[in-house]
Each structure stands twice: as structure tokens, then as C-alpha cells.
Image (tube, rainbow, N blue to C red; front, side, top):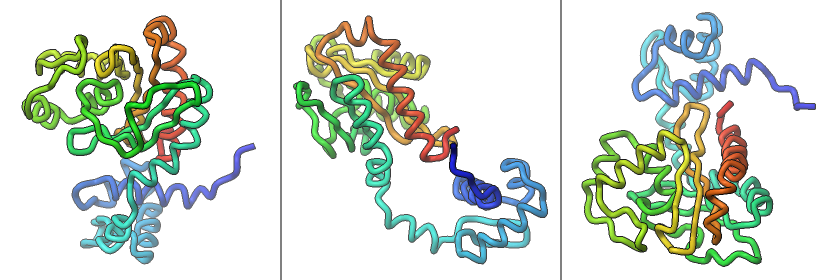
Length: 252
């Protein structure tokens, strides 16, 4: 049986989450429309949040996040929070698939592998936690790059050369652009021996409640048949874990 929640608290947190997610001050009418609460309810929640120092009343009926609250939030390391939330699920996933799994984020155009779970019988030792590797040639990197806004994606593709690590590595910007389009369309990434000729990976995005990409989740195999013949089953496992992690951050 699920633990009961306090509905008023849940709704007030929805209001706070909405205000935090906006780049500009928000009017109370917008909060009512987007969060789905009556005007009196929105006013009550926003007044309480303002008294608690979580939001700031810029002028009558207009609110924005309280800078002091944002400053306190900045003290927390986002990767550390993700690691704490995601690691238990990755441990289960690694055992279920009997292989190495990773959770990565995009930092400075590189994949930062913030979580790595390796099984005793696995030999995928080319990564370690908090190591950064090129994004264009890995399944997890393709997912992260595919999720970038168009301007940022094009800036990445025009940023320099893309060395070929194996015969299968895509090295031309046009080839990589097409691969990222495929990755976005199918909502998963594939590394078919592009980093190591004997390494094959599948990766899926992990999104929060607003659809923002938190990172990407991958599974690595030494047999190519695992990502061809077993693709559907592996993707189901990956997406199930991605949804579990996303749920922690507000995804439904």
C-alpha cells in the first residue's frame, strides 16, 4: 500500500517547482493556469512560500524564486544528488543484465560517467567514475547530444575534428548530425563498436517531470548479438530504470 501524501503540500510544491522552472517572474494567473489551482489557492500557496523565503514577491501578483534560496540550493552538487538517487537502481540493472551499466551527464561537450556498476565477470574497464570521454562516438554521448537545443548541437558539430577510434567511428559532422537525428527519433542511442571494436552499447535518456534531460543510462556488452537480437528486451530494462530515476525527480 502506498504511503499517503499531504495533498496541500504536494500542490504547494508543484507551485514552487513551476516558479523555479521559469526564467522570468511569473504572474499568479499563469500559476493558476499551468499548475491547475484556483486563484485563492495559488495566492495562499505563494504567500506561504514567500513567508518561508522560497519565493520573492516582486510586485503584487508577480513572483520569482528567492535569490537567497537559490544561493542555498547552489551549495548542493547536482551530480552527487543524481548519484545518490540513481545508484541503487543501477546496481539492480547491472545484476539483471549481467553487464556493466553507466549513468552519464554532458559536461563541457564530454560525457562525465558519474556512475559505473561493473559485474565480476565483465571486462568493460575502459571507464571509471567521474571520468570524461568523447560524446560523439558512444551510445550514452549520442543520447545526451541529441537532447541538446539545436543551436548548442550545431556549435558542438562545428567545434573541431572527430577522430576515428575504430573503423566504425563516425568522424564527419554530417554523419554525426544524421546519427543524432536518428537517436532523437528512436529515443535511444547505439554504439556499434565505435569506441572499441569489441564493445557494443545501448543507451536511453533519463528525464525529470518537466521533460528535461537529467542524463543518460547505458548498458555495455562484448557480444554484438546482445544489442541486435536482444535489443527490445534490453531497452525495456533500461527504460524501466530510467523511469524509476525520473520519478524521483518528478516524472510521472
